[in-house]
Image 1 (cartoon, helix red, strand yellow):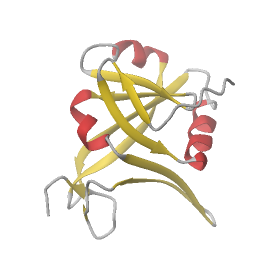
Image 2: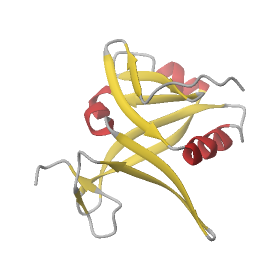
Image 3: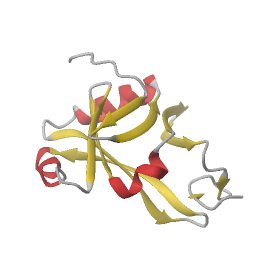
Length: 132
C-alpha cells in the first residue's frame, strides 16, 4: 500500500474541500475497502433524515460505480490512499467535516462532526443546516 499523505484540504478541478479523517477512521475505512477486491473507495454524502433534517452518509464504492460517477456532478479525490467521491451539491455540507471511528467495548461507530453545523437532534444522528 502506498503512503500518499495529503493535507486536510483537497483541491480538485477548482473544487476545494476541507476534511479531516482521523487515523482510526482511515485504518477502518481501508480495512473495509480491502475486504473485497471490487471495493475501490468511499462515497460521502448527506441525506434528508432524522428530526433535525439531514444525516451524513458513507458507503463503499466499487469500480463500476466510480466509472459512473466521473462526470461534472461529482468530485473525486484521494485522502490517505482512500478514493473519495462526493456529489458537488453536497460539497458545502461536507466541507469542514471530521470523520472519526470510535470503539467502545463491543460498539464500533463512525462519527461525523462539522463545526459549521451546531444544531443536532437529541440522539446526535442528524443535523440542521439552518443558522441558529
